[in-house]
Amino acid sequence: MKISKSLIGIAAVGIITVGIAGNALAWHPKGVIVKKVQNITTGSQLADADTAASAILAKPGDILKYVITIKNDGAADSKGYNDMANTVLTDALPAGVELVDNPANRTIKQNLGTIKPGKSVTKEFTVKVTANSNQTIENTACFTGNSTANDNPQKGCNPAIVTVTVPETPTTPETPEVPTTPEAPKTTPEVKTPEAQAEMPAELPKTGTTNPVFGIVGVGALWYAAHRFILSRK
Picture 1 (tube, rainbow, N blue to C red):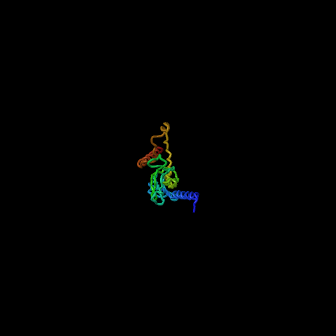
Picture 2 (picture 1 turned 45 degrees about the vertical axis):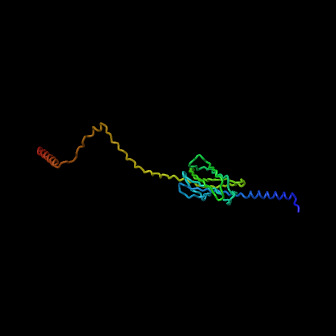
């Protein structure tokens, strides 16, 4: 049986196409990123705080530690088909935090290279809370990567959320005012004129009998004088 050249050509193209497709589908890295946060100042647990309900609590001035893990969950293979190559970590810091070792740097970017299936790379850094008002700070880290054949791009992001609360400043209670007792009016001493002082005797005259003996003598003298007067009239 003769086979036409056209049929042979179609079969060859089909085999080649299947081979290319098979190779393309063989590269399967699977990148995953997980970001966690811990409040070092308060000693909190390292938490995967990626929701508002699981957010870590902090206050202005606290030191936080972010831990970022990027792993390759691709199936293990011996040919490197599932390696994740050219892996890059990027983390742009939001307002309200700053790097402890380099406050001027607002973006973290690191080339992590190739990550084998089942392997991971972990990076961590510390920040200081600079927010001075009650707010929620969401710090998101992202990664990009690809297969070694550069035909299976990988990317992902994961946030870590912190709730900042500013402590209330205690107010000093007001001291109640104590009513003061009004001072008694001062009496101004009477100033006497020189004429009044001259008219006033140095000592007031004493009245009444001050001594019984002198009283008896005075009565006797009056009786004697009256008796003499009567005799002189006879």
